[in-house]
Length: 189
Image 1 (cartoon, rainbow, N blue to C red):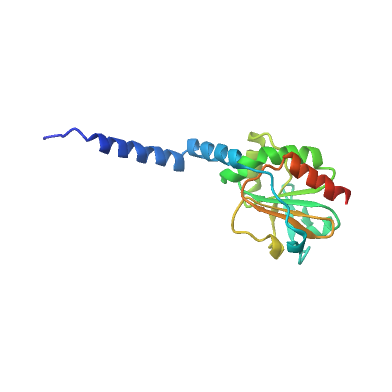
Image 2: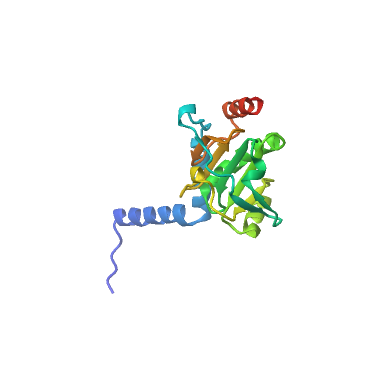
């Protein structure tokens, strides 16, 4: 056998492929994606009044982790914060700490619905591991058309009149001063 020493460029290419594979398919990659999402998360912007849409239906049914059924109808006339997320989604994980801080301060002032497609067992294990106390739900029926998204995280803020005043797809800093000011304004309204 006659073995040749690999060229420097071949070794660099192999190292690059291994690095990319680690980023895409390992816990290290997930950690990097989460940290990058946190770096680029900005305060979400509300929708201009002229572009806001009213919910077409409050008949959306959900179930919480204890098995209790709820409908959006039960929260009509209240400010509702709805977040669609999953435990396998790095952008979702990235924004969870800011949502936890917001939830801790506003849970008695607005309704929070954190809707996951994960099993409750998996979602609850994630919440415990990450030290989160967010109220989680699963969707039983389809959400109103104004909140349908094929991408997560997807977050919506509904005002007391039923208008979708915020629709954010992707990571955001939910604990920013500017978002809290907007929330306070809608609470007083």
